[in-house]
Length: 253
Image (cartoon, rainbow, N blue to C red):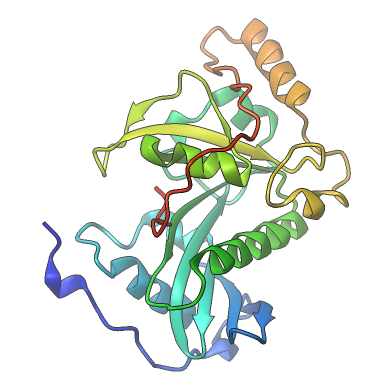
């Protein structure tokens, strides 16, 4: 049952960008009035607003230890925070649910790996698909600048068709029960590879030395021979097909 006390109206307190050197406006859609912004860590006003978005209709935890060393992306409608996405780079600290991801990938691509979580768009009457695409694209674009090349996520298995449509690949035999949510979940990845079909292929065209599917397979072979404890399931050859789109449900793991 949803705790009704957590269903809050959007806050109209102006963001104070000057208080944080990490704050940056990444994009603005003049037609809709929406803009994508980002900041780093949990000691800034943007983070406070995004925690508010996380809590809308959610009875679970809304703040986490990894927030302190993560990038936080916000979707703003005027002065209202209506969307949130958190990105954690492995070089900055321990990932959310790190133990469930293939250790071979974490070892081989330590500098390039990041995870996304706490993705939510709420409280806006704008086009959901358009706002979702806008937010994800500019977060990826910003992470490319940071040196990121490979994103890992865990998601409710019911949302796999949606993530495949975006461009994620399923990591085979990676099913697990999420320790906090209790949901049947699975791990997926996306490489910054212009040859892989995704919402972001055009962004990846300028990436030098993109991570390929062969690189993922190679890292598994190298670490498997050197370390019998390396657990790296193969990537499913899923491609992009005509999957049903889970309308009106854009909350990730």
